[in-house]
Length: 265
Image 1 (tube, rainbow, N blue to C red):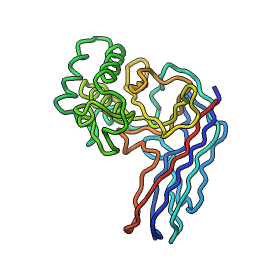
Image 2 (image 1 turned 180 degrees about the vertical axis):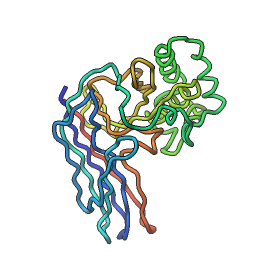
Image 3 (image 1 turned 90 degrees about the vertical axis):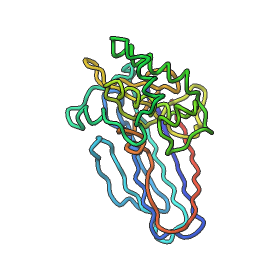
Image 4 (image 1 turned 120 degrees about the vertical axis):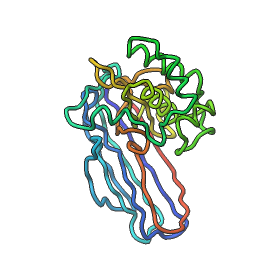
């Protein structure tokens, strides 16, 4: 499947900014389930300071706002050819060891409710079936909603609140899987939605390692495994490692952000 993506994010500031650095993970990964046909990251009001591949295998741009500027526009756009692999991605030859994805992070440390969630599916001997049951159980217990959480909400907080977005669903799944002794990681990317080209934001899901298969994806928010409608951008232990945008700025300027995202065939 050929997917065309155009993702523009514009940051505006209420006063001139001397220094604002953004870390961008906006380049699709090269993996068996997808191939980049063409892809560009372009800027207005800023400059690319550096480009590198991090220890997770993610391509990263470091972008700085023009000194004294009051806005920066970042556009990632291109065409990606995808293949349906039933959500399975082979374990890479290079990269962090599996134990690295078994340790909790600040966002994914399990509390009482996630520990109880993990124990509910722990009796299933087949790892893949256990993970599918876990995904379905999270979807039942934590409804999709945009008003109950924010970017720093932990998995346990989202679980207790009973509502969350794709980031929260992924964190809960990762936390519960690790509590069951299964390595798990966070994936950021895009999803082509049926009958909807314009979208409010990029997407996120989780992957767990299954012996004999590799990394297997679980999109709790949509109760399915990733297929050819998904494009992967970055992976990591949690949102912080794989966020499409992260950064800092110096000064007291207030920031507003406008996103224009289209994903279509």
